[in-house]
Image 1 (cartoon, rainbow, N blue to C red):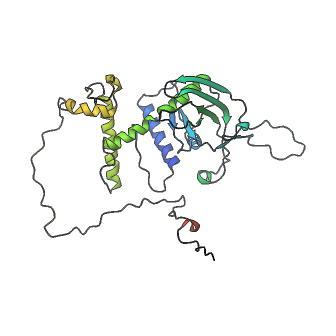
Image 2: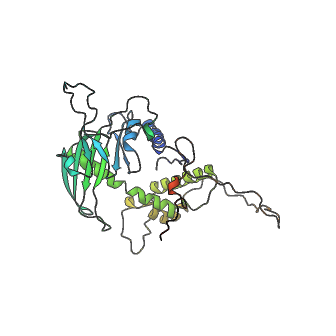
Image 3: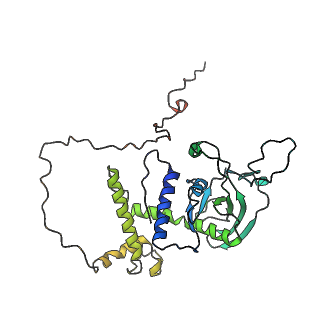
Length: 334
């Protein structure tokens, strides 16, 4: 984990993510983790992020973005060449439609790869080059002053034979901020997206094992400090992975020392901690405070943080009238 940001009510998720990613990349460059001439940093996102807008906001960084798209999206093909029209008028700005749910609009793919895997069976990936969304002046682009940009990228469609949980395997649509993808690029991209699922196990581990959501904190600053303590603890578990003994359960498979998960590292960390030197001094003895006098109640109300939705205009979100209960008259028959 490199960074953690708490979202405030009404915050623009894409804008906050862009600022966070920019700061992380700048720190990586300053630390020498990325140098000119190296491959671009690949950022993998799920469907909840606006990957095209992030690509536009982070275009000046050595960064490539790969994000999953909804299966009901519609893309546009490259702008057709301008041909003289005797009727005049403005030349077209967008090409034909590429509808994810209509195969007759796809045409022939630019790249097609077939890979045999153990977990998913045969994986077929097809890519379509230079596709872009048709932007409109609403939502995030409402305040954009200049002409709306054309954000071209590569759309990748991935299909597999089976899933490990036995569910129905549905096609996965990906959008890559680069163009001109080769067969090697397509295989590298969809493999990188499958590695993103490891993040879901990480969130489950820091909640169940490290107790991220266990304390009931009311102060936002206290919640941020606790989050950073969890991040530091997770980093420490990753660093000592090769120093602890694997205390596996009887039903768990043996693993190499450099392949232990943070949860299994935590089991053997207690034996390692006893051998580590303590930089701090011994704690001083103390006594508990007097506390509240007997018979006196706490008259200070606990702070309550409003977590309701806030619109872009700053107004509180409210359900439409036709969605509220009790607004429709009762239907009487007779």
